Amino acid sequence: MSPLELVAALFATSVMAGGAGAILGLGGGILLIPVLTLFFGIDLHYAMGASIVSVIATSSGAAAAYLRTSLSNVRIGLFLVVSTVSGALVGAALAGVVPTRLLQLLLGLALAYSTVTTLRQLRVELPEQTEADPLALRFGLEGTYYDAALDRDVKYRATHVRLGFGAMFGAGLLSGLLGIGSGAFKVLAMDHFMRLPMKVSTATSNFMIGITSAASAGIYFARGDIHPLLAAPVAVGVLAGAVLGTRLMSRLRNTTIRKAFLPVLGWLAVSMILRGLGIGLP
Amino acid sequence: MSEPVAVERIIARILTFGGLFSIALVLGGLVVWAAEGQPQAREIVRVVHNREAGRAVDVFTSLSDVRRAIVQRPPDPLAVTALGLVCLLVTPVVGVAAAAVAFWRAGDRDYVAISSIVLAMLVLSFALAAGG
Image (cartoon, rainbow over all chains, first blue to last red; front, side, top):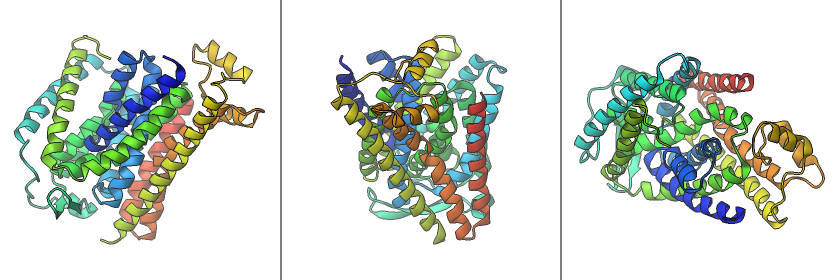
């Protein structure tokens, strides 16, 4: 494959990764890294560098659109980012000290449990509003968005804020310790614990992943993992895909997004359990 | 709560402008690189440094690398692409800084504090990256 053909193939792959990432609240690393390493034979370091660029490009493209339509909630995003980034900093400091494989195994089992609970909630379009959480009231963790699929305004307010905040710290801690992206965990914490509508969870995750990834982007750049010829078509493709993805997402039902999210959760659970057992995956 | 809408609009504008500006640089560099017949890196110091570190010769590892490759004659088109990627990577940080200012203007002290904490942690992360 000539360099120009590689650039074109990377662009096409990235459009799809950006579209999926924008809808599911993920940075696209979970999709891009295996494709770049297995299909294109790209060195894992450059694939991870391209992946961090992809996360920020998805976030910039998708979050800009979701903020305008009030699907991304800035207050909830910033409130939870404090927890995620501090978890990531602690995780990075503890890396090499704690037993990684045991953690991966425990995380895999927790994700497998989440996959089962998500399966049970597949038909839930909007979460039932329970009594107000004092922290949600104190920090204004609520909002309204127009749901094009339901053709009405949807009001929501976060519940179990402490639990969600703790889960976000755990997500950041694991991402710092294990070097994995945490988009899926963010969606899970907002959807499961804080009982936010699935669309708000994925759109707010899109806003958050850009910030949390920026925290580690400097490391990748200084290490020389961001190869311009690989990262450039990924950035352009992912941004274009993310813009297309946001247009599609606003028309989808929450249940459809949850169904699309389920295989990602299942894959994460399996890959973490296998890694915990010492069986390597890309 | 009318203030957050304004905050969201400001952050959305920054993310859009940052994304488009970065992509313009990324694409501009890439197009010139393709039009020039896909030249290899021409800056000897960086090429030698990268080869010694076992990296691809086209890679940039610091802003001074990027700056040198842009100001040299003829400029390295991939340095313009790398500058675009750097702009993309810092866009979310600028978004958080703008959020802090927007919340301050709206008189929302809680979220000025929260945005500032996030910003401080990002700066700490960059400092740790530079040190590590």
